[in-house]
Image (cartoon, rainbow, N blue to C red):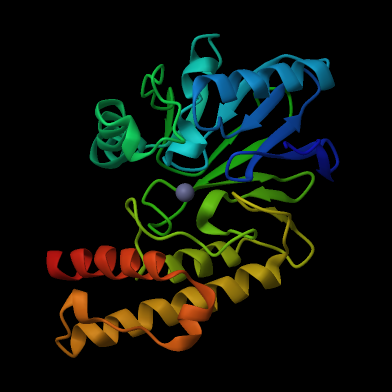
Length: 277
Ligand SMILES: [Zn+2]
């Protein structure tokens, strides 16, 4: 079941859609709506567009991708087909080529490998407006700031701030309904630092919408940065001690917090970076 629109700030809404409990945002401006993230296939994106048409009597004038992962971008084509600009981190096309495109091909060729994915009519669609530096846009007559982040959850993470409401949409650099996900192009060693740089911008009373889950506060981001730092420190120590990636055994507190498969992905991604030099 999908939730209803939740007001998270003045004229700013979140809706939690299934599958994956993904956060979709709406920023209501005087003349139009900005949508945050586009869901995992064109039909899911069409559902967003129907829902906002029913509930807000304004046109959709822009969409923004928080990062490249399929559950946030595979609906892009529904927006682009309507001539709606889609903003996103400038490295999304690069990430698509390395990760999402391969996965899409694999699922098309072997649907049984991920039977929950409805990807037959997905046309991989990168953002039409690539962002490589902090950018302020006002497509619906209301300012929205886009901040490309250093590598973390991916190297395509874009923080979105509605400055007059002090609401942030952070995608999966922060997750609330489950632990943050490693794999599919993650940067486990750099992620804590990306959060610390972001914390310099986040004020104590700001509202933060994670990519999955309910709104959190600045203290939650600090805690998640500390947890991610513990993962980074243990992997780096294992690497420095010459432990082979398949032999890395991370501490029990980490296993209390993350599923084994996530931690194995973290080790794999971090080791790949460390051996890149
Ligand atoms: Zn993600």
